[in-house]
Structure formats: C-alpha cells, structure tokens
Image (cartoon, rainbow, N blue to C red; front, side, top):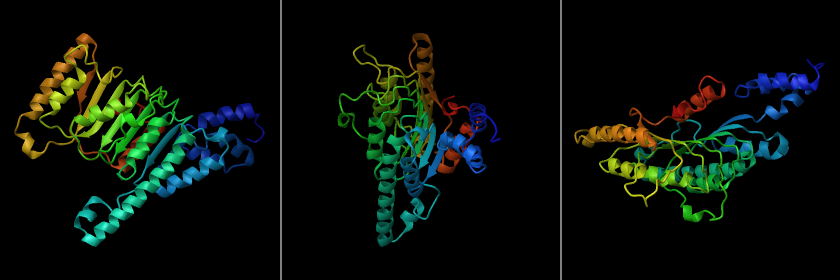
Length: 327
C-alpha cells in the first residue's frame, strides 16, 4: 500500500472514508503514509455528546491546521444520556437538592454553550449538515445568536432541538448582516416544551429572514401542541388575506408539523377535525396557486438524543437520505 502513488492512494482513501469516520481512524493506525493520506478525513464526520467532549473537540480543532478542519457533517448534543438530573429527579427532590441540581444544570449548560460557540466558527467554512440538540435551557439564546451571526457558506441542512422558549430577537442582530446561511434549504426545529403554532411564526421568521438565508424551502417543526388558536395562526401565516401582508416565509415551499398527542381536555373539542379540514383546504390552494404546502405528520413524542444520533449515523452511512426528515 505504501508503494502506491499519492494520487492513486488519495482516490482509494476518498472512496473508503465515506462512512462515519471508523475507516479513517483505522487507516491512520496502519502506517505514517496512510496516516498522512487520511488526515483530511479526520474531522469529516463528527458526533459529540456532552460539554466535556465538546471542549475536547475545540482543543482538537484549534490545534489542527486550518486546511485539515474540513468538517462536513456535525452532530452535537449537550446531553450524552439520561442522568439523575432529569426532570423526574428534579420534581421529586427535596428543596435543597433542587437548588443544587439547578446550579449543576446551569453550569453544565453554559459550559456546553461556551465550547459550542468556540467550535462553530472553526467548522463553519466547510460544514454541510449540522444537528444541534439543546436540552439545557441555560445559554440557549447565546447559542442561537452565534448560529445566526456566524457565516456558514456551505450549510444546507440544519436540525436544531430547543430546550426553552427564549429566542434572540431579530433586532439584536446587526442590520447589515449578510446571509449567514446562504445555501440553507432544509430546517428542522424540535421543540421540547410543547409550544403552540405561534412558535412557527417566531422561530421560522428568524431563520427565514433575508439576513440569514434566502433559499430555505423546507421547514419541519416537531413537538407542536395544537390549541384552539392554531388553525387561525397557521391560516394567517401561510395564506395572507391581503396583498400588503406578505408571507413570513416567502421562499418556503413546504411546512411540515409533527404534533405531540393532544391534551385530553382538547380531544373532545373537535380541534383535530378542524385542523385536518384546514390542511385539506390549504393543500388544495397551494396546488392551484403555487403557495406553500402544509403537511401534518402523525402525533408522536419527541425523539430522544440517542434515537437522533442513530438516525444521524444512518444518514452518514448512506442508509437514509440526507433529507429523510423532510420527505
């Protein structure tokens, strides 16, 4: 293998290192020649779970030459696994224990966000797909601000799990900000606090702003709780009644909603029937007039971090298409 010409070896390595990184890591141990050949693939696929590993990633990236920081696909989560600091433990803990748990969560949240804010500018020039799962609400607004103000010239698919309802305002962004995600086409927002459809207007308009991206065509919201006001909100959001009220997301071709199960108190109100009637009406109008299409998926619980990582690995290994969440 060491006798192969560099140009031939590089072609072989490029074909071999198309998985989630195992092949590149194995080839680096074979010889110095192969180690040098696989160096550009060292950071191509990265999955990081937890604040400590995020900090280690920052150290590894900052010590590597800029030409070798070719991260194309990144999965990050602030929660590596279910721990005793979960919601059930907090609710059942004694008052003093609750205070200690909150302090630990706050420290962990800001530690993760601090490392993430250091990592994102390093990977931004080359990254194509990004999955960022935020379970801890502490520091979420700062992380979103970094996402919106850091230029990602090649990013096309973004999956973001939010742990709280606090978002950075568009007024906080520089008015002369150039599109930070000019090639972003697919956005998936996972909401953990079961918000109403109003969150679609708030978060969707932020990401679809002209100073963030102009090519956003598919948006999916998971974890939405349908309420009696949702039909009206979606109707105004997708099909403005007057010409002076432009659509909030003019470039979006399809909006996908994955709701959580209805509260028992709303199951008897006929809300779901009204929602389905509205879907049919808007879908038909979209086909006729070329407006945004609207689709509601079956009700389900929000994905866990482990399930999200497994799906990400399947996408990177080629077992699922990159746009599977929007198909």
